[in-house]
Image (cartoon, rainbow, N blue to C red; front, side, top):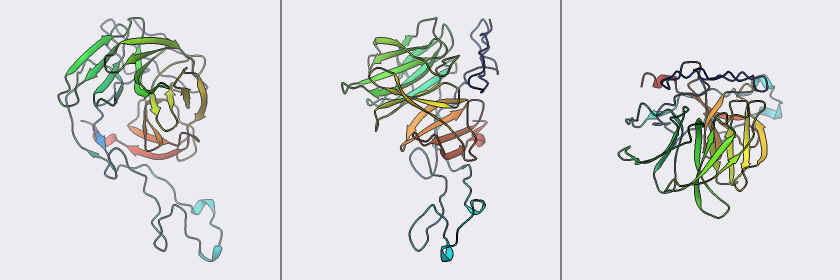
Length: 285
């Protein structure tokens, strides 16, 4: 049967999933079937900067050179552009029946994946060399599994956290055993209070959460209560909704946009876009 359509969230339409009796999801889904994470750009291990202005007098700068202290108008400032500077390093096989929602590495070097769909959601530990599923546990059937990430708790131990789509429930697992330790309730953007993506900022010991709106939520790692939220904007200053899977890299929150082939990296304090990548050339894989 169809998944009931959600109301619009803060003016941003939330795409909903249509799931048939066999668990297949139509093009209208609220979640996406994520591509395998096998890309990197040419400037660093996992990502690259949007080209900055070249150096002036031997010093690299992001500011325009002003002759005779003349004021430069806003129209003359350099315009940031979306980048295609990445290289596909490797492509690996993956379970085609796994409706991947969250995927990350924990400190043991294993891949931890959470999958979605009602009655089919799972939490898995995967060998990164062979992609063999070493352990898999079922998420309770009444929950649609979503994003997940490894994080360090206030006690210094590592855990895996999983959020859910519309049930407002999160789960915390022991690493590497995947023993369920406890669950908790949360809220995001009303009225849906959905959960989409989650990542961990080790510098500030915060969990960062998306819900399909234009907001990023920052949670305390001890009680999972919201500390703050920011509105995300693009290079052109426009707000960006449909924020989905999250990763924390180089001090930035990087996210994909549901139904788009772009990866955006934003400043976690201002929400402003710092890097933007176009991955449309990857298709077909």
